[in-house]
Figure (cartoon, rainbow, N blue to C red):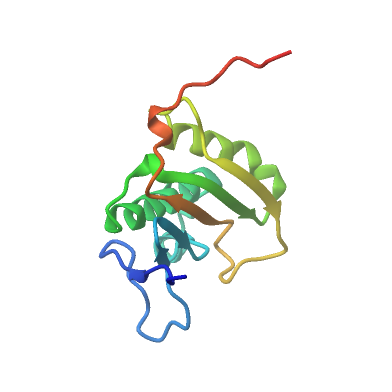
Length: 150
């Protein structure tokens, strides 16, 4: 049995730190997995300017990073099928949901998602972190919602 090809995926819009001990994304066959993405460093710059990014803004920023990684692997937004969302305040769930709906507005079928409240993220100005499952062989943009069977 042959091993699937594993490739490190990088995107210029989602730079990795030279000192990082992780990869932002790995492609294993047609599957792309991401590390948890945050709005850093934009959230740090906003906090220093006194205008912090809220959960809605951070979610859109993070989803954009995930899209950029998918595109760097030759994919697109429709390949994103799974999200695990970490928030520091569960009260932000509606803003996160609104951002997901806005980000995937061109699709009838949204990625699956888990949302979990955590006690903190790596920097205090962060309130959202998202991991994604991306499959380059599927396209959620082409799916339509099916009626619920009784």
